[in-house]
Image: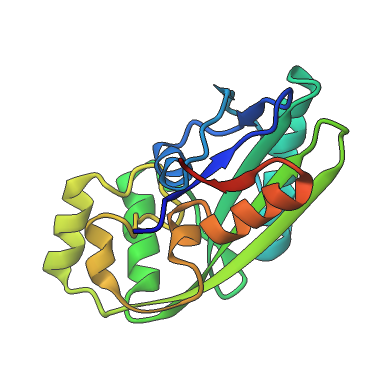
Length: 206
């Protein structure tokens, strides 16, 4: 059996994850990427007037990385941001049940897009960034499904009012793109971005 692949950070280059999201932590752990420190970024996430979803996702990921990087000179800093969009409309990270209900009613029976941007600041202050677009289609939600999902509370704090890795996975009838990007961190793109920035080295374990 082939030895599993792991990510080994180069000596002298600590890795900082600028996110406290448990979903992103689970995903980066899946590929063996262990941060030296988790230091969440605080950024104003208000979209600019008429700002479109794609540039908004890219702007937020970069803003988070650049907010944390000065606190950790000489480190690699990784930040990400996920945006759910219906047409040109940026859906909120639902905190109130009415917000979640409005999002789910809008997405019911329709296609929508999820944009996840990943940004890396290197020890030399270079910035590398990648944006991943995924297309998702929901089935038409019944009143019972909508009410049950809202009662679960799973939607709280989630972009677009749903978590694809949970109960809402049963709403998805079609997905084109990266599943892990919808969860919050596109694994292939993140690994490649860090590799290009000089951070990870893929090696087989002994």
